[in-house]
Amino acid sequence: MTVRSFRFGVNMTVPDSRARWIEKCRRAEELGYDVIGVADHLGMAPPFPAMILAAEATERVRLTTFVLNVPFYNPVLLARDVAGADLFTDGRVELGLGAGYVKAEFDAAGIAFESGRRRVEQLAETVVTLRKSFAGEGFQPHPVQPGGPPLLIAGWGERLLRLAAEHADIIGFTGAASAADGHGLRIAGPTEFDARIAYLRGLLGGRDVELNVLVQRVMTRDEQQELLRQHAALLPAELVEHPGESPIFLTGSPAEIAERVRGHRERFGFSYLTVLEDSMERFAPVIELLR
Image 1 (tube, helix red, strand yellow):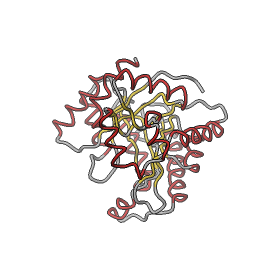
Image 2 (cartoon, one colour):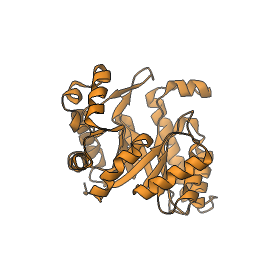
Image 3 (cartoon, helix red, strand yellow):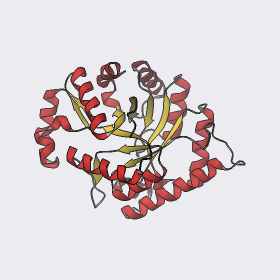
Image 4 (cartoon, helix red, strand yellow):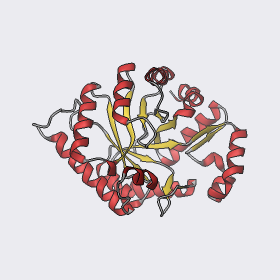
């Protein structure tokens, strides 16, 4: 696969006031982030209004849904909203899609929490509808970007990766798999990452895509030790023994983290990193080093 230049995103999760949302989006652009993402969970900001406001407040950053809980959406209506967002941001939208994993949110919305297989099927049906809609000459509103916004599909399981390998421009790795009962996530270690990446590359058959990883925490060493102490029972043994090898937990000085990120690009192919909002300021010096 091609060694790509780095891109950096920040996923906004706190539904602040209008003024605060504008302030932090401008700050993300000022810090050098390339993409502002909006998470799709109940209790957080609604993705499309938040993206439009972020676009109005900034000049160059791209905007993405990171990621939409696809079973919540009618595909035809979603195509309209995505195309409209692309139109009203002058083509700055990237579209992140996922199959959903939090059963409690489905329950709260009164939507059936289907099997993992069925949720991936719903995702596949939505992708096909979106692509068909965006390619239609008479479809309105018409997206600015030919064929519609670049598509990111994020997840972990084999069915989802097969779908992503066929359709996605960007493939996102969460570093965690949903528990079988839909309650919580199981964290993956670096060896499991190696296996997932090898499986994906076999599916791609040489097709070049951008690989994204969602960084869960950017930490000091003291914070890392506290994380390991509190959650050791939930982490794979190799992650407890070698926490620096994980692409989803970044620890150390900016220079140390930058070196790890370069290593993760070489080992796993991750050139597009997304951090969570609470790590935005802490990760910013790393961006400067990696430019």
